[in-house]
Length: 401
Image (cartoon, rainbow, N blue to C red; front, side, top):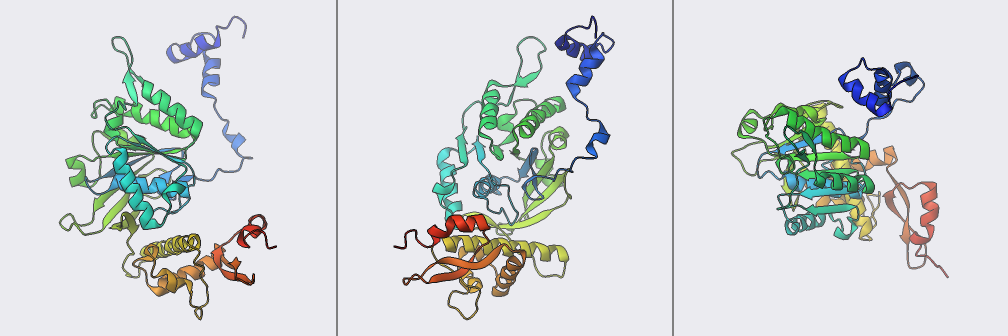
């Protein structure tokens, strides 16, 4: 456009005085609108989850919980499951690196919890190669800071500029912030401050391609009402999902916990998981058989997850199992004695095994060789033709002479 002012000046003008020459063109360039009909020939993108149905990918999730319920341990358990590609409370996770920023528990405490989780799940702590722990206890952790000068507004802090650059470079799939008010320096009742804070997190989650889970302590009124919130509604409104962990019976310390999906912009609200503390980590509680299709579906998922976890553990230990009831290593019977399948009955695991066979998740194949080099057959996770070719020598022990 002849005589138009420079684009950067026009952008500023577009925000302040839309009538300035060139401002309309700058507005279109700055906002990059998408013409709706142009979407007609594009495939509809699939919904992405960090935890299936609970934690959306490229978004911020608030994770609130009553004090002492174990949300920090549960979040750390999620980080472990993510880097190992394992399920979390029976739900599929998106495999990838994970960053855990802890402002409440130091590295020694995180170490103790990790050791307990790995021992209970039969995971190797040395295998958590993609998990990075940040001990931020006693440090300055504010994500946003006031700009200089009278009346200056919020802007990303120096700490957050550096941390977000690291996150962008390292590309973790999951970032856990423990907990919200250690990272938010403003007045918790100020909605404008809360919106800016959440917007800063949301921009990083979207631009860098990760899920950000922020642990949050509910207020007394938030616990009494059961909504699990604290401060003002702007925190909850800006999050794309919110989880709330509470006791099923506040008078019974041994009662199961309930993990509720209090908000989900991308899935059904009201999702609920019953969990319990068991040998150093949390596990799903099987619902009672009341004929309800939803509890039955949850029970199936839990049993299937436990079966695969036990199969993975047995494989790492060199204990190969069979699908035959006549053999001494019948998988469901062997798994009953393993911690991964605590609380399940034989028929639960038998049915889970059959569902995995039907779905093609597992198969009967070569898992090793006997002394005379005869192939040893057993249950294994299904492998592709390429993987089978690559692993042939490894299964057979390499050089056969």
